[in-house]
Amino acid sequence: MTHLDAYNRPISYLRISVTDRCNLRCVYCMPPEGVPWRPHEEILRYEEIEIVVRAAAELGISKIRLTGGEPLVRLGFVDLVRMLARIPGIDDLAMTTNGILLSRYATALAEAGLRRVNVSLDTLRPERFHRITRLGRMEDVLAGMEAARRAGLEPIKINTVVIRGMNDDEVVDFARKTMKAAWNVRFIEMMPVGNGVLADGGWRERVVTGKEIRQRIEAALGRLEPAKVSAGNGPARYYRLPEAKGTIGFITPISEHFCYRCNRLRLTADGQLRPCLLSDQEIDLRTPLRQGADVAQIKTLLLKGIEVKPMQHHLDEWKRPENRVMSEIGG
Ligand code: SAM
Ligand code: SF4
Image (cartoon, rainbow, N blue to C red):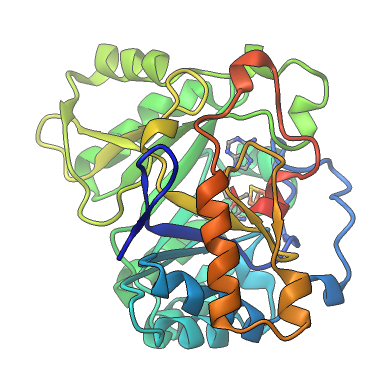
């Protein structure tokens, strides 16, 4: 049975960061030199993650998303997927990836029991892709998306963080993509979590609101009609252009927060349960796990996390998380 938190929200979703490491250095997420990686022994082992997921499943959490850092850089990641896919009660197992290594692993992931992927792609221009991610090649991501489609990891959702002066001139190009192909593009408002362009303190000026993006798309391509995407019940609101094959979603943590319908908990790569992405409150699961805690004991800690989940974030009061960067929490 799904548990309700103190504000009557059913908690049905756990996001797990499986590593803090990444093969890219996106400007809104990391500084150019990266962040110091945590030593291996601080990162939860796959067997430990499995215990947490078993406990979560027994509490009615049926949806798991694996994220990072970049999940595909962790050795043996396909084995983790296989372990988690077998757990009774988990009926949606998904991953968020930057897509760079996806073409190599898509088939194996689908065979291991992964259901679908979200791929991050902030630009459709190869040269700009390199400027935003600092290390990557856009062609690899597109090949990864194609491999995921062929492997049946669908619906594929594309996450696009929109940053003024960096890629906001492409929102119409992304929207146009949804006309002919079944792309599900989700525009995300940039949050003040991380480094890079945010370090100069100018993040607010860089945020492009969902409303502004929508206006730009409608001015160029016509009215957006509300739409449904078959999998997931996350924070995005979906729309469709007339006759379009794909959809356009908006994730608006800054301009129109969705905390009142938040259904999730998060687990950091080093084993801290985080009831809210944007609050520094954490419950240590790694220490008890290493002292031999079983599923029942972890369930008690997860319940505590559900109990203390805050009502909403406080970015509007300029309060931002202090103790973590995005790659450790997993977005
Ligand atoms: N490396 C994987 C990827 O990029 O998809 C998974 C981890 S990444 C932290 C998860 C998501 O968070 C990505 O879609 C990324 O674009 C988004 N993200 C990272 N930093 C962000 C920020 N400051 N504001 C909004 N979204 C952010
Ligand atoms: Fe890596 Fe994802 Fe952060 Fe980009 S957003 S640096 S791909 S963790």
